[in-house]
Structures are given as C-alpha cells and as structure tokens.
Length: 163
Image 1 (cartoon, rainbow, N blue to C red):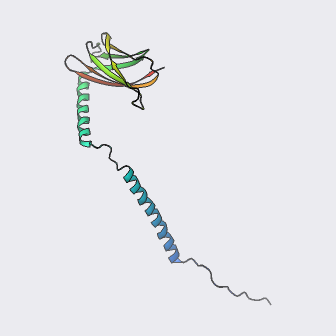
Image 2 (image 1 turned 30 degrees about the vertical axis):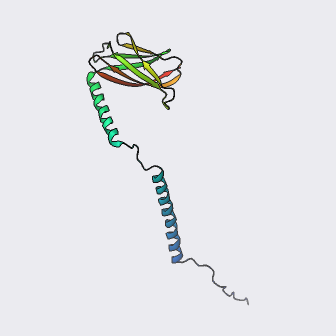
Image 3 (image 1 turned 180 degrees about the vertical axis):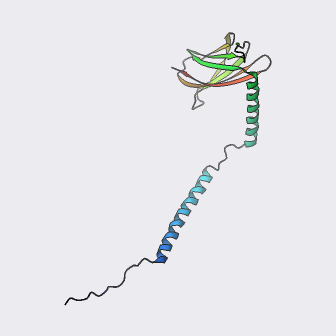
C-alpha cells in the first residue's frame, strides 16, 4: 500500500483583508502622485496670463472699437513683397485708390522680435505706397497704420514672403 501524504504547514494565503489593503494602497499612491503633480503645476504656473488683466481688457475693447470704425470706412488694403521694397495698395469702398495717406509700419519675423525693421511709406502713385526694405529673405510680418486727412485710421497686418 502507498503512504498517505501528510499536509505540510500552510503558507501565505490571500484573503479578503489582503485584497482590501492592496486596493487601498494602490489608490493611496495614485492620489498622492496626482496631488503632488497638481501642486507642482500650480506652483510653476498659477494660470495668470497677465498681471494687468483689467487694463488689457480695456485695450482690447478700444481695439474692437477701432476695427469697427475701420470697417465702417470700407477701405481695403493689399500688401506685397517687391524686390527691395514693401508695397501697400489702398482703395476705398468703391474700389478707387486712396491718395494722400500717411502710412508707417514695421516688419518683424514671425517667431521673434529680433531684426525689427521700421518702415516709412511714400506715395508712388495714387493709392500705391512703397517703403524700402533691402536684403530681406523669408517670411516677415507687416504691421502698418494709415491715417488720412480726416484722421481716419486704418490698420493692416499681413505676412509677406521674399525669396
């Protein structure tokens, strides 16, 4: 006959308390890490974009009012990158060239303020204004302001590209 095996001493046995402790421990670690990351994120950037939000809002309101007045004028502008120059064409609501404007502007690189160029436009033909811009290559952002004799203002922004 064969011998009967005697059961050995019981080892570790997983029961309900162990499972509960593992689940509570898991969620405690997850919550601790989440709270730590949230605190670090808030300390590095609290979400404040501007230190003068009210004043920025007032400036924005003035800009909106200026754009509405500009739209009421009915003027239209086009800008082009000419060899060694920037050309701005201005027409009124009827498509007639607008002569006698005073236009100033600046060229900036799209990603940086380095290399900013201030432009002074002169009228070369009715409604055609030109400013010297030598040795430019690549993309540049044009911001220009035009003022008429009746203090009518017009702002334009265009991206120009030179070869």
